[in-house]
Image 1 (cartoon, chains in turn brown, green):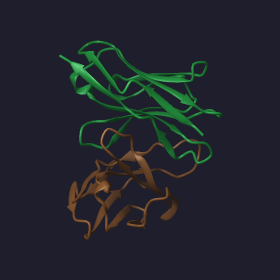
Image 2 (image 1 turned 30 degrees about the horizontal axis):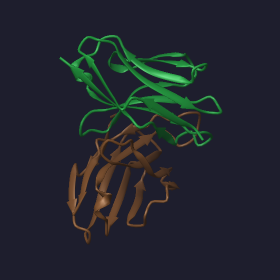
Image 3 (image 1 turned 90 degrees about the horizontal axis):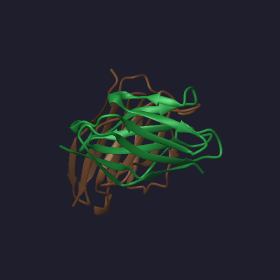
Image 4 (image 1 turned 180 degrees about the vertical axis):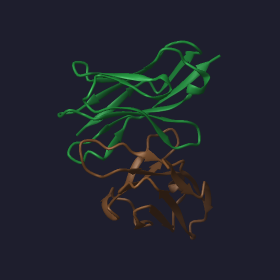
Length: 115
Length: 114
């Protein structure tokens, strides 16, 4: 299995809602990532988990809360989001998070709309 | 800090014509370079990667890229464009000692004319 899956595919939420995005991989990868991508822009790194521990937080607002329950799962909990948070949220994984280079495998993304 | 610059936000070619997407990198150490493709409403897919083993790198879907240190370039080419190649293409570089952090270029949208 060489896939990274993400659910839901689309999500519409109000500014007072709480929702979660889910990412799953079964490639045995020990590094997982969340990216945010606005239209016609490259992905921006948000968080990196390595061996289920948070390694990088790119100064992301606290209304985004990541969680890595096990080596296969990555969640992104959303609360009190703003309309400008509307974007495509991409999950990725890679074999490890250190070394000479690291090929990342991306999921299809969750299209989030905040009303 | 390492970075990549993609020249041309939009490239349009005729079906069957040569595809050339330009990428220049900035790095004080040997870089690790990638080309990713993103089809509409999808995630990113790795086309090819340079890791210093060979300067000419062959990827999927008939794409290849050549690492030229003297020009600090890693341009992506395909001899004959197909309609299915229409997508957004991102050049990327891995960053320094934290090699797993990938820095993406701004992207080039490739359109194919029938």
